[in-house]
Length: 53
Image 1 (cartoon, one colour):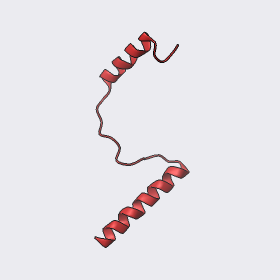
Image 2 (image 1 turned 60 degrees about the vertical axis):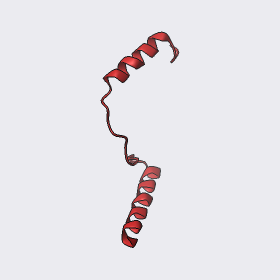
Image 3 (image 1 turned 90 degrees about the vertical axis):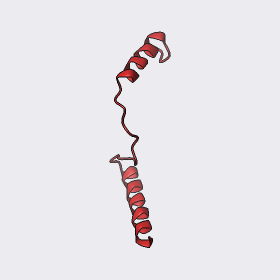
Image 4 (image 1 turned 135 degrees about the horizontal axis):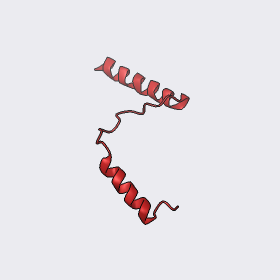
């Protein structure tokens, strides 16, 4: 079934209505090597900024 069929659009709207509103993530919280490297880099930048302030 195509993603834009009438039935699927209605289904998406119903799901959107039931969805709990949550604040957006402040950072990517994955556990892959690439993401962990990004987090490590971001943490280092934050520490450096705190040290200079």
